[in-house]
Length: 295
Image 1 (spheres, rainbow, N blue to C red):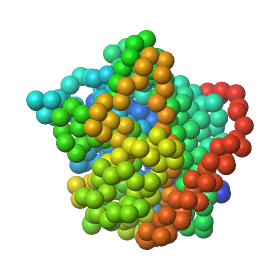
Image 2 (cartoon, one colour):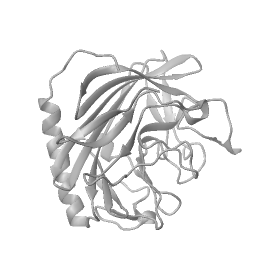
Image 3 (spheres, one colour):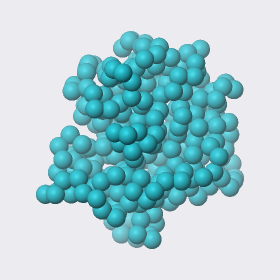
């Protein structure tokens, strides 16, 4: 396992990124962010929890890419339910095109059964917002290099209603009480889960996470939300139908996450989302392209 890369906000360490974690095959090994903290140092991610040992902080995970599991754990099979299969893939870190204290541009290969199915271009940027909040801007672009058309699915598209997880995913820490859940125009896990909303929020003990789709395509993806069973939020690349990616085609998504100290209300969350998305757009435009470096 390589040492974690530390991302900083105005000089303060706020996230650690592991590019080559030492994980068993059934965890679908992949890079992930953990720990991620608020500016006051409150942890807001969790890895390898007892309830779902394949949850790995914050990152990108997909349960079904052409039948291969890049999420970890059991695979939901129509007519059989959750099934242990030897179908796990690996997201291999190939290197960095940019490695700054507050920004990473990474190249990855999604490999399964000794074949590279997807090449990924991933960008992560840390942006200061206020004295008590910062934002993580994460974009991933998945290009089909398999030589044939493939599609992305989820347990929901394979027959398990309400389980359309796959894409960006953030596992928050379990606490004595479930976090509060709210969106731009809804309250509670039942109302927010599966909704198409500009943003959704989890608020725990001394922290709030606000997740926002930052492109039109990303905003069309419904949100996957859990609070009572475990705390986690993700996007749904394949909510009610599989997402096709033609040979040579690319699927791109961008999620901006506000990480704040304290419990935000709806107005405060909306204000920080507006600031975060606007700021990260300008930062992306200004950032120069740099040559690749080993990572």
